[in-house]
Image (tube, rainbow, N blue to C red; front, side, top):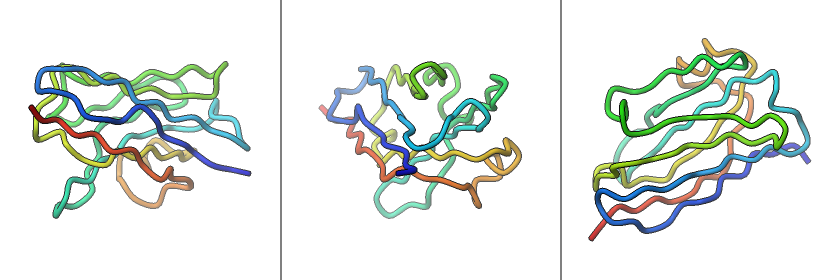
Length: 123
């Protein structure tokens, strides 16, 4: 079964850290760009950051210096390390995969999506 599965979400205090994982099954991530998106209650989905198949990274201004993305092709998994979390980072986080980094940066039309994992930043 072809799917992406996110994990690692939860409740964290402001200033804390979380690491999200996006594990692929049924296909190999090696040749895919992977992106992380989020959607907060009552807001539109927004791109957070993405990584191309050859390792180029692109970040939203709101997370620069706080979030990083990495990929472990051997584990067929991409990670989102989130540091210095703020209440405004609260959202459902989704990962997506597409063969085109241009499509990923555009933010729509990706081939595959996970079902999301909830991150809540609150004291």
